[in-house]
Amino acid sequence: MENYSKPPFRTIKTHVANLRAVKHLNRTFATRTLASLTADDIELYLRERLRQRIRIKTRLGYREGRRMVKPTTVHQELRVLRRMLNVAVRKRLIPSNPCSGVEFPVAVPYFRIYDLRSTYATRLSAGGVADEWVTQLLRQGDAQVFKKYSQMKLQMQREALTKINRHANEMPESAAVTVPEFGNSGTVLAQ
Image: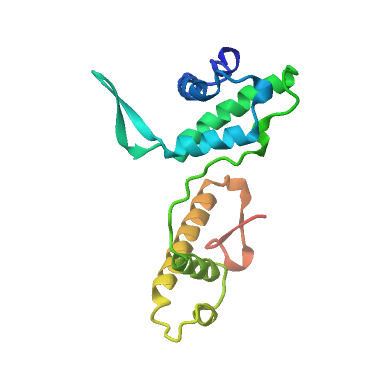
């Protein structure tokens, strides 16, 4: 671990997080041989670890907190374990990495499927679909509901125009061409 986690390979903050992960991994896997470790063992560790509560360090020692261990914490621990086992495979201590058969935990915040309507309508509108069509695709008989989505469309158009203006102002003078039919009043950007 020391040869693969310390700077310059990883930042000091990552190294400290990796050492913390190794402490938790050692509690479960230190007595096991590498060859006896299976994907089922790792999945069991994952399930048990996700059911644990966080430990809080106090002056008098550690106490159990109210919150559960986050999936991202367990994910970091499994990344460290996977890295260690990849080194073992490369050094031919084990034939394959048992972590390859384990799905890592991912925290997905709850959202209602209904919340996707806004995204759907906004993207349709921004893509140039006519407002009437968007209203029909949303299955709304009333165009009043569409007003909030059209406000997003106007805001996106304003942002796009601002970006275009900023880009045009940053271009070198050689890229700007005077158009003869407009006289001196108009410049067009050369492509």
